[in-house]
Length: 312
Image (cartoon, rainbow, N blue to C red; front, side, top):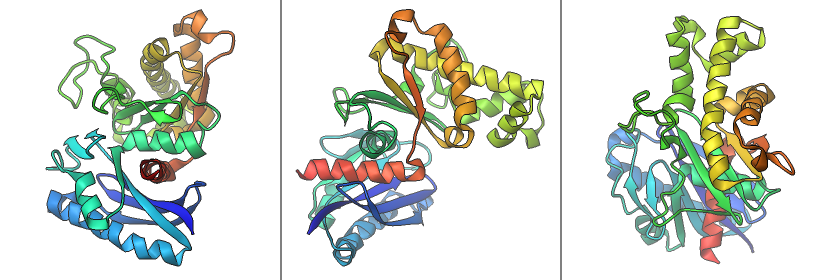
């Protein structure tokens, strides 16, 4: 029977679930409401139920479930699978021994990691990053997450928390960030930051959605174009520091805003990078800046791949 794993992408609003083969084929997928307001114990019970029900389901699909992978927001101690830091979208989640609890429930190996790390793994194995063994993956959303993929594996640092690139400071005493510090890259390059830039320009609420801002910029609305250019400059500012730190061959840029705006956004970021990255880092070949390919499936596929690797 072919090997497969259950991938779970735990978000503040929804839980995405999929049974994925070791070839990266998504055999089954589902989405259920997170309902984190019910508390951490209820959320854990929901995840355990999903995992348990997936074992017999895999058999009906002609595969053997060899592990469970879970991507969750916050900081995760990868060796133990314990969530040590969580965001406000998952209240009370910090401290949850997630790996151990799901392992007890299913009897299967369990891999738990930060959600962006799982997205990066999905792109590394079966998405936009498959061409490179080493690359940067950045996700632009409500926050800014990131991951350094080294030899097709997540580089986690001492405890597995590496990759909080959004909280690198690019402006001393700058804008207040959700983490409590000032001047973090996230405070300038998140989707929330884009909308703040538009407000600062006096734009009306109906003009503030990323879709509307970019639509207006594409139509050469000078006010919107100025906001978008400044936003892409901030994206490039954070990427410049990462390029000078990691010397990557490629950067995979993901998140809903990238999926929606494609080359229009990427071209502006590339242009800004050309002016800010030192020449030696751009030769003999330029850094490849590409859009993520797997969309909403990336976290599920990456979590399943992590689980299969844990089960080897």
